[in-house]
Amino acid sequence: MMRFKVDPVNGLIDEPRRLVVSGLSPDELVAISARTKRAGGVIWMSQATFMADARGEIDLSRDAPVGGDYAEVSAMGLIWSQQPVDSASAELFADDVMEPLCTKLTAETARGSRIEAELRQRFAAEGVERREIREDGLVGTLFAPAGQGPHPVVVVLNGSGGGINEPRAALLASRGFQAFALAYFKAPGLSPFITETPLEYLETGLRWVRRELQPKDGFVAVSGQSRGGELALLLGATFPDLVSAVIAFVPGAMVHGAQGAGDPARGGWKGAAWTRGGIPLPHLWQDNSAVHWHPWAGDAPPSRHHSVFFEGLKDTALAARARIPVENIAGPVLLISGRDDRAWPSSLYSRMVVSALRRHNHAHLVRHLDFDDAGHAINLPIVPSTQLTRVHPVSKVPYTNGGTPSGNARANEGSWRGMLAFLDEITSQSTSSQSSHAQAHT
Image 1 (tube, rainbow, N blue to C red):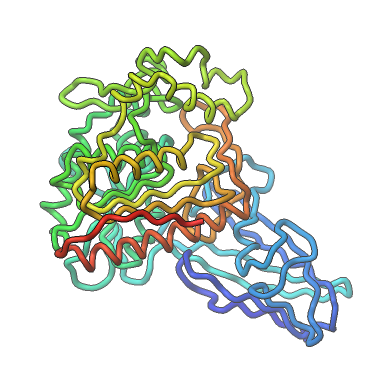
Image 2 (cartoon, rainbow, N blue to C red):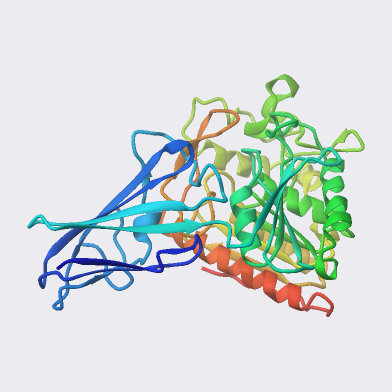
């Protein structure tokens, strides 16, 4: 009798599972499909075919498929190779992060045998509490881990899509951190555009965290992705007394204009993204003498987004004015990038940050995780990594993230494990001095 074992059935989204089909004939072919309902009720699916071993068994942690949506040994390949069915959706998570994502697994043989199993992925561990924050003008969601504190804090910032990054914050809380997912635009009560976001708003958020959450050992890390990675570095450099560590996913090394998240009525993509004291910060698109074409006009290949940044850096005087003074950061720095990032050159930008910190003899840990075959959309582990191109959620202009599904899946896993290791290392050493070094991960 055919059997389908998932071990464990229930777990956090970052937990790999063992999927084994047994009770087959030797060399029998079995097609296994995975079906998950994600945000908005959109169904995502994948399928792969396997050949049973001499004992009539298939183990996805050991066996590569002989055909299907992925082509390597990967215990969770049926999850990361999923694509949306009859939809252009790029939303990977559940509508409610406190509810698990449920995946229906179906194994079928040519002789008509069929068996089903289920796999459930949670963002929030048992005991994690979610609380919406609407205080001091702030818009965000706080996730508190189970157990009595104090706990170290991570402030989580989204990228140019705006909104509140609840999935990452919930999973961080599940791993022992107070996590404050703080919106800075495109959320209730905030501007729908990134244009002229005041750094004072983020400063208010950092001061609120320190006052209200009483972080363990005063530790407050800022983590951001893409434009949020740029912002995390900028906050660490601007408010070093409030930021204990910076975690920058696919970041910029300098201040950029509003770009695809810009308000068309306030300069569009050339508008200022950040202000301080009501004054716009110098940025790379501010009368750039080297850029003579519009990267978001919609009339060029998607790679235009990647190319324009290299063009922009040719205006060396402007690039120097727009550079984030990362040497002012007063704590450890983790940089995460993809070498095939086609949205902007995050690998180059991360190396520029590492170089600047080295030149200034940065007195804290510096680590750079740089992933082969990975693009701009480095995400949580064990989620679909197939969305290589997408439409920007604000500008509605198509662009490409880059990478391959397999490379992106490895970056998702490696960056999450690397970030947790980094946080564990620096929080356990938060009261001692740390020597500076950089470490590459491929």
